[in-house]
Length: 216
Image 1: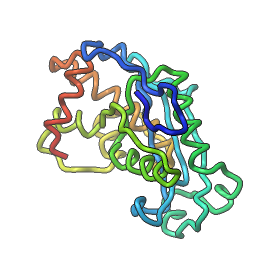
Image 2: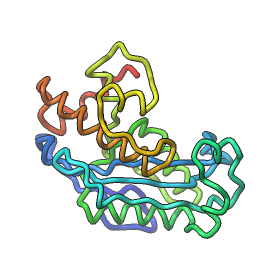
Image 3: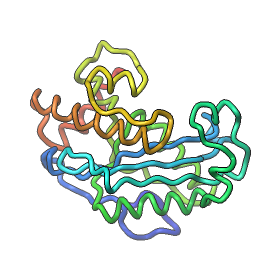
Image 4: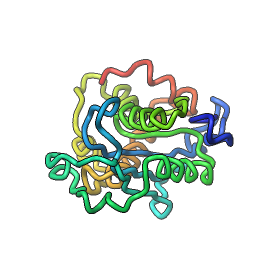
């Protein structure tokens, strides 16, 4: 499946049957940092992090991280939150170069889908960066930790990633850094998949079906 068109013509996501067992999935867990939440207007991408998951195992050595030059200032509140400064992004590649590198990682890994924590925001960031370059975004197959959490504990309210990692006793990395959050989300995702497997969710189609029952 292509994630964008006009410039990149090769396949980025490897299509698989819905019957594919969970332990045969190749997922790319993605996280982004931005100058703010108005990514459809003035805010821009400043960091991308990603780590592959294969067989419900996090492949840390294959992780990807890059700062992005937003071609605008970084608000002090964002620097305070992420520790990303103007010096970090001054010589960084632009958004298209970083996105191309990110999905080259996906191609190399034969990725079946994207995953993440509150992934809808990260996909929105990518969509707007591509649109600014006159490229059409086609949303890829994706699954969110929140989809699994809604199935496992439907009474919970939306909480911070670190909260869920603490509750499920999974690894935590540097918060509000793209790679740190991607790694934290990846380990949380694998633990949640093991738990939904115990409840009878065995394949990709059944996992995707959990999106319709999301409550958080």
